[in-house]
Image 1 (cartoon, rainbow, N blue to C red):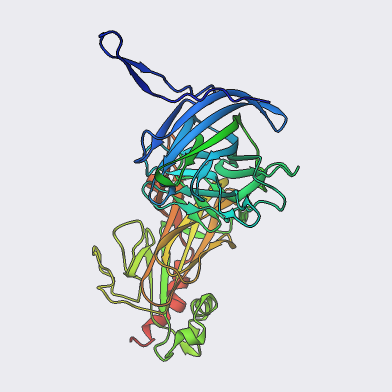
Image 2: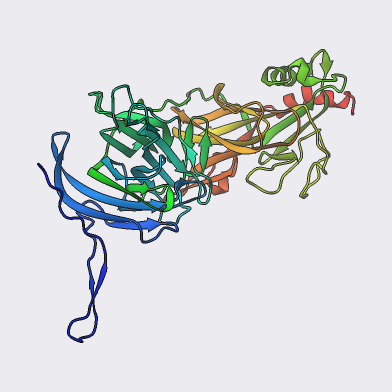
Length: 495
């Protein structure tokens, strides 16, 4: 029978011999060949340790084995408490481990591989962990050992789940291996959680695929800011701040240049340069309000379909719209009330409020409801991957070259939502954005996420060419829009 080597813990032994001065004997932990360092993160310093135990046989393979002791309240919320054994990595890399719990006293004890941007307790991180409990007293077994792909997407922000947890298949005690990896695809870095249940199916995706570009957020794809040089290793928490959990970790390995385990992401493709525009930078913005004759727009079905009807025909619900206005601007950075976007120097929605600039409150605290806004322009795009963002209250739909590249929920508060799309043929494309406002706050920002020289990414207002953004031009001829539905604003009622 295999006998585990003696576990060594850091200790100080004071020896007083025959009246000689006391001597301190320090035994330093051996973190083995896999990791660069091992530390406690958070308030539970001094509880955790990583001890290399040599090699043992697991799943028919001879693997390095570690004994990890951890404390800590949790890896969650706005700050973490856990033990971390890690190394610094760059580029595309996969890391995985096997595990077996030795001692624990909490159902939420966790262990798993983690990407982390630094050792601060509130750092950005992405990890794939296993939860132990709860205990099934009837069948005398632990019921879960489910995997959870989770992360903190901004320094100091609350942690989130990245897709649903992966429940173990019937008849399986626990995963054989769990992993996490970064894969570059079409120039964009992705992070993928992995699990091998030991059923012969091999690696499977845990949770959702995660696009690891900075400062982005898109439905179904969460995008934290993880730099190319980051830390990657094993995290473990007892889920009780001053309690202790102990886990055998085996097969901790790093592999360069992995491939996706699950399907590769699919993005909208734009390949019809159709933009006809003036050589004048800017975007054409038009807003129009639902008729005041409609007593209850919600009951009548105010939503995206109604928004499109109002913007296309100038009428909805049997009544022409009101307070229509049109304006050409360098950027789209509009605010009526409540939450704002990422950028300052807000402007009013044309026709909805009096345009005053500069001003800190373009709507003059006048909360308007039930109106729609359309933005038209030509956007000059290079071939390759692009990211367009919208911060809106309420929703927005974005089309480029006649292709819908994204839409948000129709009802939402002011928040960033970003959409990745691929351009096959460089050129000028038509840009159409439609924004809906129901009740409460109203705001609209159009943004672009661009890569900076020397690496890194930044969020800018769409049209900010000086910061590396794509040029946008007033559509040709602008007079058609100004003399079309926009001219009706001269004869429509004011409320």
